Length: 517
Length: 113
View 1 (tube, each protein chain N blue to C red):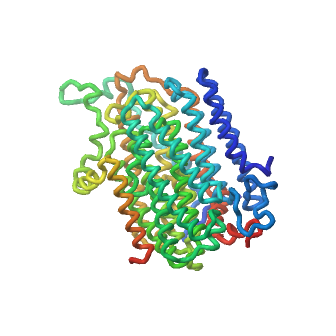
View 2 (spheres, rainbow over the protein chains, first blue to last red; view 1 turned 90 degrees about the horizontal axis):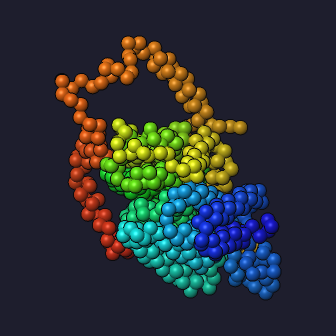
View 3 (cartoon, each protein chain N blue to C red; view 1 turned 90 degrees about the vertical axis):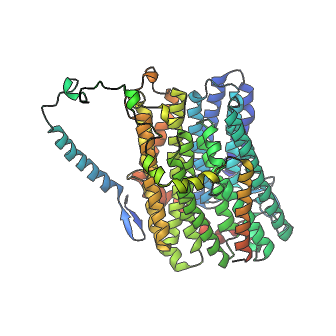
């Protein structure tokens, strides 16, 4: 079984997605089935992480007699669809499966009263398939196909509550934005295929050289993935989509966004990693986009009255930290002294922030979903005094808010600490903006806490009770992870983050599989 | 197991931080527990005194989310005007921003700068 682990990572959720509609008449069975499938995929991803960390890069060739047969006799270049899984791919796969499981668990109660739930769960699983394909593949065209799957499933889920006009509008916007970005990705892939006659990322990275067509492909891939990961000023679709999507889908949609960020890193470090002087420019572009993203995101969040929209702007803002951390690393990629002094740590901060943000932002969006579930509104002006009635949700919110604001000892602090220190070494202004953003983040969550949870109990919410147990369980799991990742950051960094950073930095290792070196 | 997180120019030990948090928590609790013994909850003593006026209903005097940071938002009015103009909600503008940023990035990469 271990040999076929990469294929199973796609096959299991895909099987789940196509079988869920068979359970159309039994809502609870469909949701239980989705929970089982996502739990099984989570188990597989844990095995995959273990395999990658202990044995190194896994290469899986589809359709070959032997899945490790990269070059059949007579072939000089790889031609089949190949999955190439290194530590960063495995790290992203673990994030995707964990969040899909949490989302399915939360959805069990959260969307119970909606209709069409067999489609909801089928789409959730398809979204998971799309993300997993994007982060596991070693083939550019395959990356595009899975990007499309994730985009289509995601937009259908954004518009799931189609009885709300806003949801349909957000779904269509997400669909069109995804389609435009995917189209440009496809165009870039076409350019590279025309240049080198191959689609394999590792092979292309050995062949790529510095000419105008390659640079156009890099630029188009960069800007398309930057838009898909919600970088300012191409972030406008994020608040629309995150606000309207059911809260149970928010964690998986969040990972889908970061799968595009992963693709951006993969393009910068692996596909075009061999180009030397231009990477410092790309690194600076990434860092500047990062600080712009974090500052504009947080200041927009501060003025929102819709609790989910407010949190969506924070999702944009936090993406800025990741861009900044990895951007600092990319800027000094070709300067060994600076790379070892602070570049590698900066990248570790950026990548650590991905998993931290996925955990606490999912938690916060779920608490926002819980508020909507009991009050029927997302308007903070209409809420108040809910802490007494929803103690578990309140605790979960406090943990999430402290984590996103970078308050120790929660997980957000550990990654922000690394980003502040290392970005300061590249340029102090970057660190100052990052710290001001954290202060504004805290201010913004104080506002949510004060207006929704504190204050006198309102008469209209006299009958409000805590949300059902599956929703509480999903929130508590994430709150515990926020605390554990914050208390033991070294364990996570050593076992998960630094291997992922090194996977991006060691290009030769990525290129040297299957006897190609 | 080593819990200290080393950074290029410092360190962070969450366990040590937690020990101090608990220590200061205990000190805080001791100070709190030695508070004014004359305080009696659920008596007239805890009711607000509004110069003889009746206390308005809780819902009326509640500070709403829109009122918090009013001063900050007012001071940053011009900045927010710019942001508001950028956030039109129009899908065509989303695509225009994408094309604009794409053009700038291509210009930088292809050698314009």
